[in-house]
Image (cartoon, rainbow over all chains, first blue to last red; front, side, top):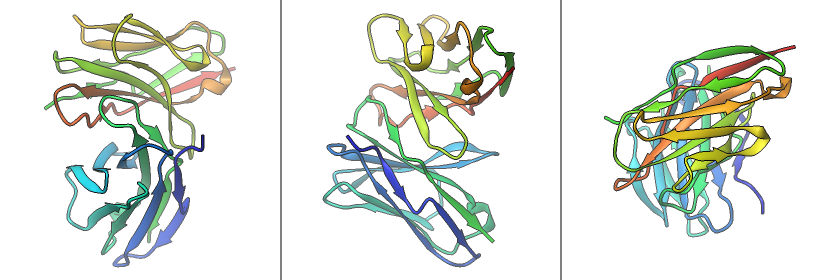
Length: 112
Length: 114
């Protein structure tokens, strides 16, 4: 079974631009969550989608948004990029409930 | 607010020595517990999990962890580490009756010296 895939793996943008990151979950997984990982803040939860609906949301500004498609693939968008948005963005898929999450390799975003 | 504390940010150890990485969580409600490992420039990989049953859980790569409800702890252990175990280790807790969104600890960097 293929794992969680994320594209692109690396991205360099400048302040003020916007970016879209993509995540393909494990086949059969309907829950997709996004995390931001930085050395200073650790792993921070962004949002979770389940069956195309945003089910949970973390404490991030409205510049961070996402969506999920009918095939469970998910995208995350960050508008008006700031230097502080530089981070590793991780996507994780799950069957839902208390089951474990399976993580993708992440997208390393650098904002200059 | 629920929290997960990994007491050591960094644990240096010599190869073939035993190691314990500590994890404590804040809530006394039913919990589901996980340990993940992250190698440089990679995502998190599940090492082991506790959902129910035996409190001693065995995982991949020779790791094991023990769920201690009274001490709200889930410490990770390995009797003999290898250089390749050098990585970042994260403890995570999912609380029942809620959204199941996991709370992660800040991570422990395990550094294995030859």
